[in-house]
Amino acid sequence: MKKSISLLIVALMAIILIKPFSAKADVIWEPYGDKFYEKHRAGMLLENCGYIVNSPDGYVYIYESPDKTKSSQAYKLNGEQVPCAYSYEYEGHRWGLVSYESPAWMILDDCYRVYDSTLFVHDHENELEEISMQVELKSSYYYFSYPGSGEGSPLFDCPDAYAREKYVDADGNEWLQFGYAYGLRDFWVNITNPESSTCKKLEIKHDFEIYAPKEPSAASENNREQDNEEEPATNNGVLVGVGAVLAVAVIGAATAIVLKIKKKK
Image (cartoon, rainbow, N blue to C red):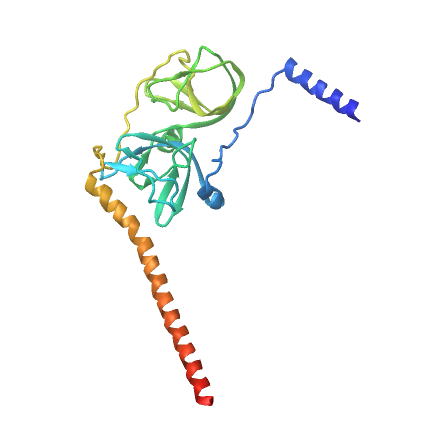
């Protein structure tokens, strides 16, 4: 039995050394040790995108957890970009997990999504042609997050990538969208000029106001700390009130019992 297992292991190692395998699908990352995520895992929305802070206050606080908003003093200023792995609706706000290293959550209500392929497809859905085409990608090619993103990144040799959307820009460049290739997700290649590292920048227009960044003031910090301290005080007041009522009831009952005993005597 042990000999058979040893032979099987040797055979598998030989296969791996002769022909390295390539991943064909994404591994979905999940935070380790994030108790809030673990508790609400079923309701989490996978984001895998970026957000830009844009609060009227000029900043947005970052907390360890949506249900623990008293301990963190960290914040992001308007204009700063954060990654977002998951989002979750909690107590009237949309929260985002904005760190891949340690639990860090912030309210996304005062943020807007970084323009990416998903938003590009939404904005240009009538200009896209759905296709299914195998394409050989080369290491001399560049890929972009969307047509018009400006700066590209170098690709690698990939003989069996599949394009799923085609888009032709105003200059006649033909762009192909790929869902996945060796770790890359949802990217575009200018197949007309694939070895160009740049492209004409697309102008992004927002239908909302962009606020200037502003550091939190000492007054706002103090107000936030006072607000966070009020809830425990209220809860303690309720507990003290209940305790007082119970104490009075117990004392009254004991007094009645004592009087009853004396009366019998």
